[in-house]
Length: 412
Image 1 (cartoon, rainbow, N blue to C red):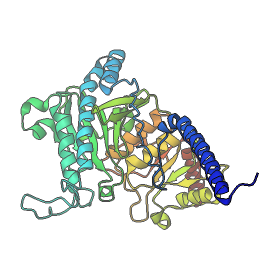
Image 2: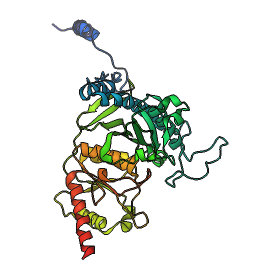
Image 3: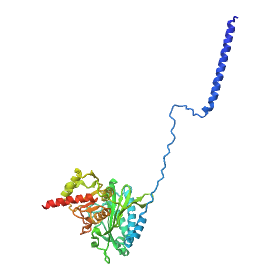
Image 4: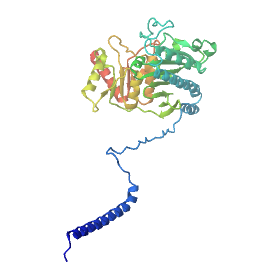
């Protein structure tokens, strides 16, 4: 059968239309099957990266150690040691309060204008210098007043005080302006702010103190203060640095207390501190090396030459409290020798060398003048100076041997 051209075209159109309709139906069915899956998907309209979710910072809850407070420590020690410790308890609490006050002043020295030389009420620099020949800093004056008030006004235990900043000793009735404060069985000596020039550079500074028993039945005079360091009943220091630490001894070991900045109280963080028997740190102001005596020069040369098995490290801050605290914790030797112009050195026996010597010895270390024990030196006046070497027993013994050897050589 022959189909006309028109019939062929009509048949072709119908076939194509049928095929198209079948394909469309299949595509629609496929799309309908995929719709539920697409509903749960996010359509990305742009090629930008997905936004990152906000970072959640971990909130670590601070965990406080269960530490004894300074007040509780002193209470227990008073109960264990008897009446003498009970007398000192209130004094040492007052020293803790003084350290808190000085710490606040040190922290605010720049914002509250405590930097620089001390000035009078007229705004002009104070005339002259202190008894040491040093220009007084503003902090020296303020911190001295705080220590005077705490020692004398906090109890009737201290009868008189002697400050590194003042020419002579003062009775507590003079400090407080009231004869009721004349009573007391003890006298105190102190350096209110050791290394005060470090404040301008935000370096560590400190406070040093020592307490002696007065002879019974006597009024305090300068002679009352001229006791050997071995007769001291308590000593300590406060270090104002990255943390504020109070270190003290009452004659049977050394303990350290750190100021908690949240609670504002001292906590017993360093029980029974013991200095290592030897250490690799030496702390001398080597700018004066050529003015030191021959034994000291030879000792330092031997350290730097590596004659010992340990490699040594030089550390010098310029504040006795900061330098010695480093030695106390890590071991080594601190030295402030005499020089050609100052044969007795710079450190004061009553305010610095004796209190620090007592602390070091109670921690298991040694305190020497190079020729003998510091605590056996008899003071002749309240501002007497002595060459001072403090630290680990082996380090100090080695230095003493250099003094002995070169002294014998000079006598030959």
